[in-house]
Length: 120
Image 1 (cartoon, rainbow, N blue to C red):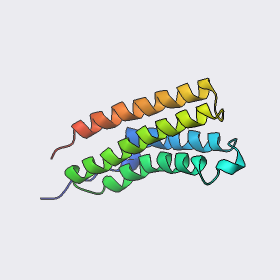
Image 2 (image 1 turned 90 degrees about the horizontal axis):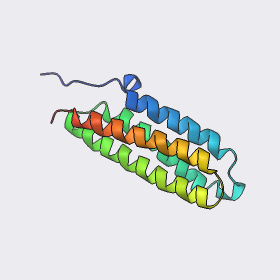
Image 3 (image 1 turned 90 degrees about the vertical axis):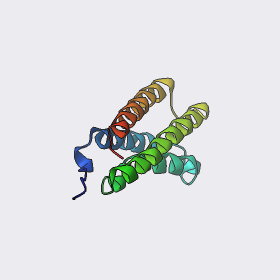
């Protein structure tokens, strides 16, 4: 029996994750230099981790893929928290935070729905 593999580039969750990572990258340009190796780096890593774990997990069995989706979801919650820190430090405004939070919440809903549809 052959294992079904997912083409991650065709997955809507991966595409939305890429959009979020690009939005975050654009946002980080305006962060203070002193945050480059701290909060900026953490925010960037989380956003990239979201879609990287989808890509890596897509080559695995559905049971293993589900584990990678859990990691991706964890990164999305971590990203949401770090964006709140950025807002409290006045690096981003309320509108920017709200737009990103809405995309992250959509990503989380879609990812959990996709995960529930996996077998195993």
